[in-house]
Every structure is written in C-alpha cells, then in structure tokens.
Image (cartoon, rainbow, N blue to C red; front, side, top):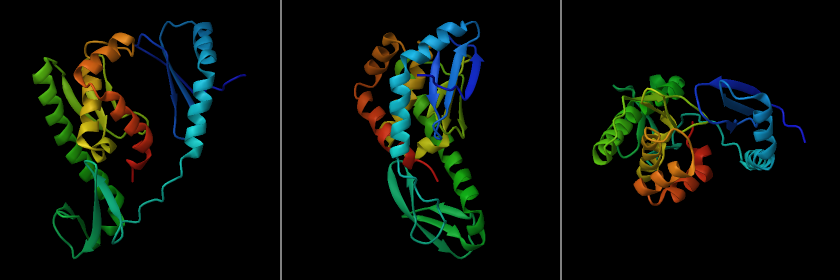
Length: 222
C-alpha cells in the first residue's frame, strides 16, 4: 500500500517523525541527511499506525463551534466554567465563579478568550517549568506559548520550551506531565527507550496522563 506524504520537512533532528494532522494528512519530519529510501522504509513500517490514527480521527465527533453566549462552558485547568454575558466591563473577560464577558466584546469572543488563555498559559507553564527545573536540575533557556494545533509541547535545540495555549485547559497533573516530558528532552533529544525511562523516573504515572490527552485532547479547543 502506498501512503501519500502531504507535507515533508527536513530539519536539524536525529530521527524521522510522522505526524497525522487533524485533517488526516501526513506530515513527515526527517533529518537533513536522511536517505529517501530510509524515509520510505520507515513510513512503510508504520502503515498500520498511520491507518489506525486516521481511523481514530474519523471517529471523533466534531465539537460544535463556540458562540460565546450565555450558558456555554469553557475549560481551565481541567474544570468547566459557565459563561455569562454582562454589562461592559474592564477587562472585558474575567474568571471568577464562572467566566463573564462584556456585551460589547461578545462579537470578539473568540479573540478575547484566546488572548486570556495565552496570558494564563504563560504564567502557569512558566511556574511549572521553574518548579520542576529547580527540583530536578534542568536548565531551560526560556518558556514560550504558541498556537500549535497538533503538538502539546516542544523543546528546541537551544533549550527553549514551547507549549500550545490549549494545554492550559487540561488538568494540572496532565500539564505537569507535558512539562516534564519537554524538560526530559533537554537531556535526551529523541523518543528512545532511554528517554521514556527518564520520563517515567520524573513522572511515574505518565502513561495515564498521556492516555488522557489522547482521549480528551480534542476537547481542549474553542
């Protein structure tokens, strides 16, 4: 069976990575000097995984797009909070017992929430990275928040750790797993057995958190 590659990227990395995007397309990331025959062989060996991953995507029920109206619920640190549209307020979006959004900002609801989530995400992720870096002796260069849709986190070659703002919707123990996962990449750059052994030593329950993300990750969105 032939598998179509929808996006092919050569980068400064040691291993070949296959990524099934939300639309089912296949992205291949390969080392700059990897031979095409080796890449093709790797894809051939992973055909069953590719097909299973696409089948899981098709089985996911598409969640309705938020309307930013009274009664809708939004996630933050694993808890759901109901939204109420109120008189104009400053800031336009607040979180107390629930979210309140000023009526004049309702049409800009999505942008308001994304900005709020990004601000909270940077604060939460920085605090968790600093905590575990001090606890286990890691030295990350910087923490950044991005809008990645297919990766919860990443660790660059220069030691910068990136997280998607969507992750701040997850429970704190799940966030901690992703934080420890990326910190572990400061010592082991790939996903070899050595890497997973390190992750397990830092987060013994990591498999449960990884499973939670696989089963609930689609809900961490607007």
